[in-house]
Image 1 (cartoon, rainbow, N blue to C red):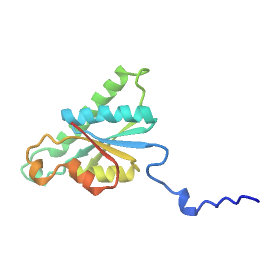
Image 2: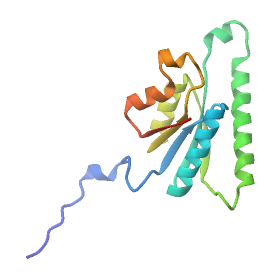
Image 3: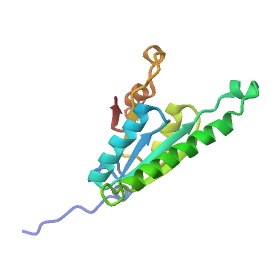
Image 4: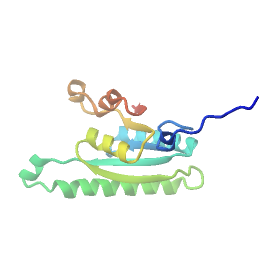
Length: 159
């Protein structure tokens, strides 16, 4: 008796989430202690899984700040530059001991929409964020809770 194997369906050649471990892990960073802990945790995941760590900073769009004459764009660019400098310094300190492939990306918008866009565009297999440090998020809902409720990726919330 000859065994016939099914031919792969053309759809099976497209991108597929969750196969053979994560290939891309997105970590949201904003400079807060919890986001930096999330980046460190995601770094460990990426190292163990040999995945790409995509560190994402979402530059807020504050129309009200611009209307008041505040240089919002300059401030958010400075934050992004500071974050990438801090990440490079940390990566340099552990080079050879803790090598992780990583990229830094900036997106514009509110943090939730920016992370969703980042995860979609980067074809993330997992998203890691820090717990919200804002008391108001207990009422409105944090970015982490909204990402979990979206149900599109495994989401890890780091305290």
